Amino acid sequence: MDTILLKIISKKKSPLVRFLAIAIGAAIFAAFTPTIAHAVETGTLESLTKTTSELKLSVDTSWVLITGFLVFFMQCGFAMLEAGLVRQTGVVNTLAENFIDAAVTLLAWWVTGFAIAFGTTSNGFWGIDGFFLNNAFTISNGAIEYAMGAGGSTAPVNTLTLFFFQFAFSATASTITTGSMAERTEFKGDLIYAFIMGAVMYPIVVHWVWNNGGWLYKLNFHDFAGSAVVHTVGGCTALVGAYLLGPRPDRVWGQIPPAHNLGYATIGTMILWFGWYGFNAGSALTLSNPGLVGLVVVNTTLAASTGALAAMLYIYFRIGQWHLFCGLNGSLAGLVAITAGCAYVMPWAAALIGLVAGVLVLIVVDVIEWFEIDDPVGAFAVHGSCGMMGTIAVGLFGHPALTINKKAGLFLDGGFDLLGVQIGGVVAIAMFAVAFSFVMFGTLKAFGLLRVNAEADRIGIDVYEHGASVWPDVYPIDDLQYGDDEEN
Image 1 (cartoon, rainbow, N blue to C red):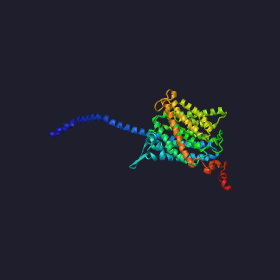
Image 2: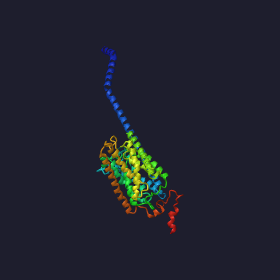
Image 3: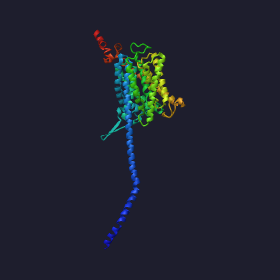
C-alpha cells in the first residue's frame, strides 16, 4: 500500500520536479555563461591576433622581397649606364664587370658581410655572429623554424629576407666603383676588390649606421636608405681607385671622351630611377606605415626631377646646349642626395635638395677633371659628393615630426645638434672609406693586379681581356687580336 502511495505522489510531483530541474539547470547555465563566453572570446581573439600577425609578416615580406628585386635590377641599370658612357673599346669589359660583381658580392655577403653588418655588435664597430647565415634558421625533430631579423636588427621580416634585401645594397656599392675604374682595370683585380668590399669594407659602415648597436646608430645618425652608407662609401672608393689607376690611354684633360652610346646611358638611367623606388621605399622594411612609404616615394621623385632640370639648365646657361649626359647625371645626383633624408624631410625640402645636387654634380665633375683624375662616368661626382651633401642636408632640413630623435634641422630652428651628428658621421665614413681604399687598391697595385697590361691600352681592353667586341661588325677584333702573332 505504501509503495503504491509513493508512486502516486511521485507521478503527481513529476511536473514540479521537472520544473525545478529546469530552473536549477538554467541557474547553473546563467552562472557559468560569462565564463564560457569569455573562454570562447579569448580563443577567438588569440586566433585573430595570430592570423593578423601572420598576414602582416606576409605583407612585409612580400614588400621587402619585391623592393629587393628592384634594387637588384639596378645592376642592369648601372651596366647599361656605364656601357653607354665608356668608349666602344671597353664596353664588353664594363658589362662583364657589372655582371660578375653581383655574383662575387653575394658570396662575400654570405660568408662574412651580413654577419659583420647585422650581427650582434662588438663595441659598435662590427658584428660577431651570423657568418654563413648559420643562425638564420633552426631544425628540430624534422621541423624548421626561421629566425626573424638579425642580432643587430629588429626588422619585421625573417633573416633570409633581410639578407637578400641588404645584399642588393652591397652589390650597388661595388658597382659604383666599377664605373669610375672602367676601361683599365685588371679583371682579376676587379674580382678581388669586389669581394673585399662586400665581405669587409662596406659591412663595417653598415654596422656603424644601421645595426642597433652601431656607434653612429646610437648617436641618432640619420641615413634612411644609404646616401652615406652606400653612395659615399662607393663614391670615395671610386675616387681612390681612379686616382691610383691613372687615366685611360690618350686621355686629353679638359675634353672628356664622348659617350659611345647615349641610348644605352639613357635606358640605364631610367632603370636606375625606377629601381630607386625599391632602394628608398623598401628601406622602410615594412608597410605598417603606408603614409611614410608614400612620402618616401614622393620625395624620391621630386629630387630626381629637380636634379635633372637643374643640371640641364645649368649646362645650357654655360654652353648654350641641352646636354643629355648632364641631365642624366643630374637626375642620379638628385636620387643619391635624397636617399638619406627621403623619410625625414618634407617634399619642398626634397625638391630643394635635388636642385642643389643637380648643380653640384657638374661642378664636382669639373673639379675632378682639373685634378686630372679620370672618372669615365662621374662616379664620385654623382655618388660621393651628392651622397655627402644629401646626408648633411638632413641636418639642415630634417623635420621634427619625422626625424628619429624628433630634432629639427638647422633651417627649421633646430640648432646644430642634428647637423653636427650628420657632419661628424659623414666625415668618419668618408675617412674610413678613403683609408681602406688606399690600402686595398695599393696592395693590388703592388702585386700588379690593379692596372691591366699595357697591351690592353693599345688594342683595347675588350679584346685583351675578353676577346670580344660589343659591335664586331663595326669594330672587328681579329686583326687586333692576332696582329702581333702575324708580325712575328
